[in-house]
Amino acid sequence: MIPKITPPKTIPAVVSPAKTIPMKPNTAKLETLTPIPPKTPPAILSPPEPAASIPELGKPTIIEKGDYASYDVQLDQGKSITCEVTANGRVNFYLLDEENLTSLDLGEEFWSEAGEEDIEKATLEFKAPENGKWFLVIENTDNKEVSATANIRKTPPKAGPSP
View (cartoon, rainbow, N blue to C red):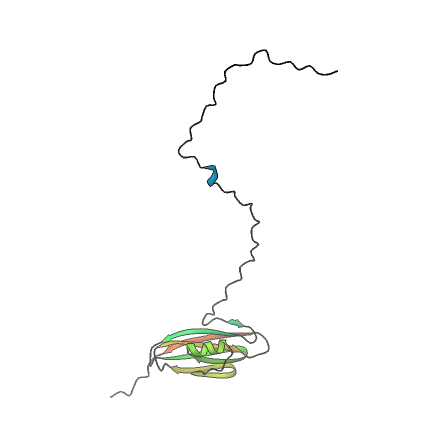
């Protein structure tokens, strides 16, 4: 059997035109919209590495085999200091300016203002030839890590003979 299609009883003779909807002044224009890119998974961050510890004067510092610890000292020309180092292994003990500290960092030849090599305990006196920053360096030359303690004290000027 074939279905019977029946037309509607009345067909409107006049159709009104579609109403226009006015645009609101703050609406975005569709042609200026850009799609939002899909979310990317967050980057996997590695945990931050601990900051290198700054050695403190008078407290033991662990120095890895082949490494060194340095302490900076600001001195005026003619001022003197006394530096003492005690370690539980063999160390080199230097007083360097910044240029020679950089040479040491780069593995190049350097010159020290004062120092002792292959020691476990040493004291040195230093009088600054000019204003500037100096670096007390304790270099581990032992075949294991070493604990070292450094002390620096300003030396009072020596009194001249009394009249």
